[in-house]
Every structure is written in structure tokens, then in C-alpha cells.
Length: 412
Image 1 (cartoon, rainbow, N blue to C red):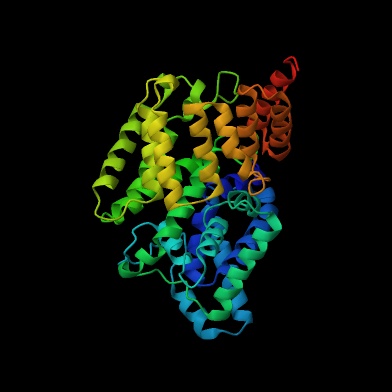
Image 2: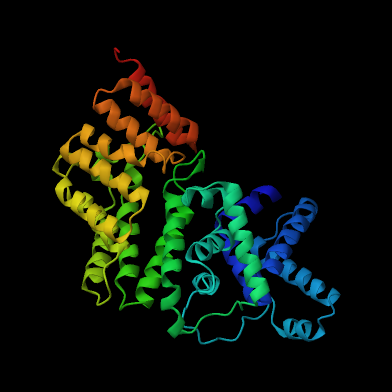
């Protein structure tokens, strides 16, 4: 394996875990990021000469730790250096067991980074960037903003941590609840990026989907008196059950209503249903993730698209809009109404959302589809063209180009 290929794999699969270990080691996010970047630069030179090591992530972590210690030496912080040098390295004997409320290394660091001194959006964005493996561009798309704006928000959050002296300390069990919303949001957005990649040639990043499901189930098991963690675990399992049916044999996108439901993973559907039942039985309040899981379960219960209980889905979206009144929820509600009452009704509901979702590709794709079904050819052409312009994923773009070509071929 070439050095660049090995580093690409690490950044796809293990970047968050390596950085998490460095943050825990240094208690300093900036130092952790700087030393990891230095280690990557060193790897490009070293591995080209001697080859990729058997454990490249461990190699990077060891080199980054040494470089960080050198930086601290140069700052003449001898007390801190002595403490760091006393700790065992990544490739040496394992660290002594510590009593943590959170049993998983990456999840511990998510709870650590989601500090309540930051705004919820800042907590989520910073954690996605440092531990979730998402780029600033991918995070910006998730928040419906520009890359420059998101970069500024992340930078401000890091500065606030540094200036206020906010410690990177693993929270005790009593502190988990105040950080739960941000951690769940991080896991949800990691899954979304994995399930429908915002850019690139692949529709699905399986590593992100699997990691998000693993983390969601761990949080659900950890916070058993809360409904939302189990709801998120249910939602991710239920959505991921459709993964194999989303592409045809030629690798082209298949919409939900056209999917062969015999290809849906029955094991994941059952797993999602179990988590949903636990969420509905939990004493904590039902929130957005539980409602979304109920929507996904309603889809999963239908033998085919025609049997879907659209009236119930519309009702659940109305409940979701009350709990989380966002333009994206309104968009999904409009599409559900269109499936129940007709495309023109859905189009009418979409129009007030145009300004707020002007840079959101799924809005234009949905508007184009509904306009095509309502016989509004010009609106469909305009909308599909805009969706293509905003799409950075090659699979989605090809699907939209086929739909645009089909609409253009219709008689005016």
C-alpha cells in the first residue's frame, strides 16, 4: 500500500480515534491537531523510504505524541512534560484502567468536546470536525451554511475554549445529561454523511454508518432512562436497513418508493423496532429522534410504496414540526403530504420554503419531482437544473440529470 493510500484510509476510518487519544493525552485540542498534522507530514517522507508500518495509526499517534512533547519542552513547561513522559505510549503497555461513566474512547471524547459552555451548534460543529472525521465543507452542508461561515464558527469555538480555560476533561455521570443533545446530534450527522455522501463518487460511506450506529447503541445502553438515545439508535438501524436497495445493478440511485423492499435488511429492521419499543417505553420525554424513528418504522411496515400509511406519516411530521420547527422538517412534511394528497398540494407547501432552502439541494430535487408529477414542466426543469448545480455527489447528480432529461423530452 502506498503512503498516500494508507493515510487516506486512516483519515476515513481512524482519524477521530487518533485525535481523540491525542486530546486526552495533551488536554489541548490545538496541540493535538498540530502534532497530528506534523506526524502526517513525517509519514509521507518516512513511509516513502521504508514502507508503511504494520500499524500506521499507532505509528502516527506515537510520532504525534513525541512531537507534542518536544513542543512543550520548547515552551519550557517542565512540570507538564514530566507528567506526559511518565505516561505509557500507544505501542507500550496499556494504560491503567480508569473509572469512566462512558466506556468507549471515542464516545468519551465526544462527551468531552460537547462542553455546555459552548452553544449547541458550536459543540456539534467542533466535535464533528475534530472527532467525527467530517470536513468543514461537509459540516457546512449539514448546517445549511457556507464553508467560510462554518470555519469561522469552529475557530471561534476553539478560541473560546482556549481563552476561557475550558478543560478537556471526561465528564462524570451526573454531567452527561447536559451534553446529551449535542452528542446525539453529532452521531446523527455522522450517519447522514455516511448514508448520503455530500460529495464524491460514492453514495454511501459504510464506515461512517456503522460507527454511528455503534455509538448510538452505546449511548442508548448508557442512558436507559432517556427516550431519545434509543430513538436515535432505532432511527439509524431502520434507515440503514434500506441501504442495499438504494442502488440498482448499474450503481444508479433508486428512490424510496421504487426500491425492491425484499432487499431491505430484515435483521436491521427488527433491531430498529426493538430500539423503538424501548424508546417508547422509556420514562423520558419523546422527542425528534423517536418521532423520526416512528416515521421510518411506518415505511418499514409497508409491503410496498402503495401500502404506505401516508396519513400517519403526515401526522408524525406535524408532531416533529412542533418539536423541531426547521425548514428541512417542513420540506419532508410537504413531500409526505404530496404522496398522500397529490403533488400540487405538496408544491404549494414547498413554495414558502424557497428562500430558506435556496442552497439546499434536496429542496430543489423534491420540487422538481413534484412539479414533474403535477405536469408543471418548466418548474420541474428549473428545479432539477438547480439541484444538479448544488449536487457534489456523483451518484445523485447522475440521477438528477436523468430526471431532467426525461422531463425535457416531454411535450411542452
